[in-house]
Length: 304
Image 1: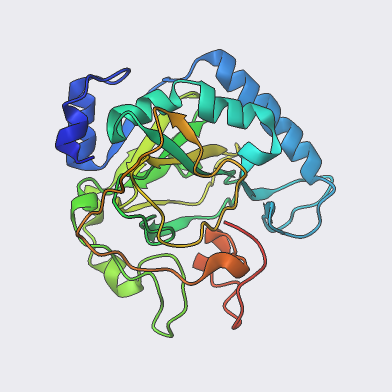
Image 2: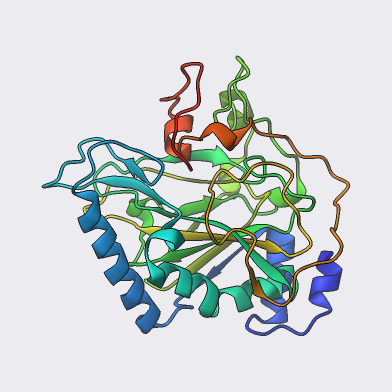
């Protein structure tokens, strides 16, 4: 569906003004959109996951460990596919108001693509450099979007998500480096050309949602505070958006229809999209790639 088609459908949750803002700017921030009951369930699940990580010594397809991680002092960068690892996460992604909100932005037929939980641990949780998502997992159209859920209050010192308003209507960037290696972010030259005064920092209390389109430029600074910043990320798309390439996050739920019906026709956007490497042999996390930890001629056997 085109934005005009989506806007012609009566919204379930969002106001028409919010939908128009999203299509104009490529993002939304919804303060305290999620009830305390869901937040409590997600916090409890996350505490269980952190406890489980104490037995893990090396990053793998599930865990991306931060520097200094130990059993006594767990420090995580990411949990890949959280929906596969605790029922509370998938219940939230499929049964809460999240898919209804997404339906207001992509159309009534919504499918799930992948999930991740970025922790950005206290006192040094790594930055995420400026990048766009769709080059990681190209689709036949640009409906895919990411919904982030702040599990705790997120202030300016905790590395909140930053977005570049309107960038979803502008160019797609090459996210390979000069040696032809995928690094998943803009080059120094391209970043130098950005007007960073336009950037908007999406801070909010627990239960707030960040939503950004797959073409929207976004980033986050390191977490210099004393509190970790877990951000639960769920990616959805219109049912008529079909992936061109291998999904780097092979979830049991990928392509699941969470609202409406499965599409019979694919919608193709005429604008081209950069293709990533073949992820079917494995893929390291965006943190490892942007820090060029795995550029050794092979792709690390873990998943973003």
